[in-house]
Length: 496
Image (tube, rainbow, N blue to C red; front, side, top):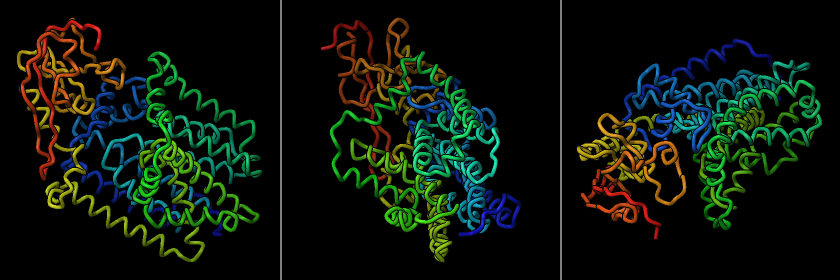
């Protein structure tokens, strides 16, 4: 294995900064010129950012804080809402570069950093605002600090405190950061050298910093019926019967689309040959085992979730910082560096192709793939048309979270209030808790629903007049339709 080097400004580091900065600036340019509108989740996060708090209905607060920062500087355009994503990924790549330089050498570090910036999941994530970008930044930072502690002869208390900061901020980004301490606990349990390095008095500083950072979010949850934690549990959906095998296979196949075929295939090769890959003494084998633990722990946990119930493809994203470090070092050490470089080359082509396509939706329409962009197009036109129908009403009342968020972003409340109505006597989203219909103020309202009937309101209102559908074409006969009603005379008898 290559000899461990200290962090320094090497030609490889300068090359990485040049290439990484160029790729990031390119992504930001595409963000500015791309045709994609904010999708429902993105507009919801933007709405949160207008009311900074320690928590929100479905996510921890960091994403709202970050959007609040970028939009306060650059305004509320879609690209400004999404701006932090490519920057977070550049930061994650930088942490991975320094970790790889610490574990291997500067040449491998260059390809690890570049590899991260070009894997398909990061390409897609760079053009959206999601919780994954910030999560992966702090996860990568925590990995760097963990290896800094493990490889350092006498780690300082501040090193442990910084590790706690990365874990704590990661939890404020997304609760999936919990996989990091789980993986660390597993590593401490099975690896004597890791145990000796981690279980020291300064590790108390790690725990204290994590608790200090996460306590305000726990307090917010306690004050708001533990909404975020309850929503996270609902997402897990553990009460459902075991999913069909094809759902798990679909999840597993999607992982190749996220990290790329060569990195994931190499990870599986190494995992199936755990003993031969890690069977030996010395620091090289210790760090290989540690990287395998941090790559496999999230992947195994989420795979079990996929088998038990369901799992979205991105839920295992935290497996891939360690994966890039592990497989790139392995391929270079095994004389197969060309595979790592080929993977990056393929992903660079994908990056360019993706940038061209999202900058010109007509190409997507020509490929008969308009449905793939359904969530990020047509909202401005649709919300404008609905808003134009609202003259004379006290409010626009919506029963759909997707339309609610985009309505608030594209139309706001310049002329009329926009609120939501509970359709099942259960709070299912942030708007139902904080932006709810009030019968004392909203006497006559324009009701907009996903249904083609009035089932959500016909047992609450005396006067209901259908105004017809409101439809927007999204290309290739792909349409999104809402149905509009004039309703008044709220009386709320017992639901049938």
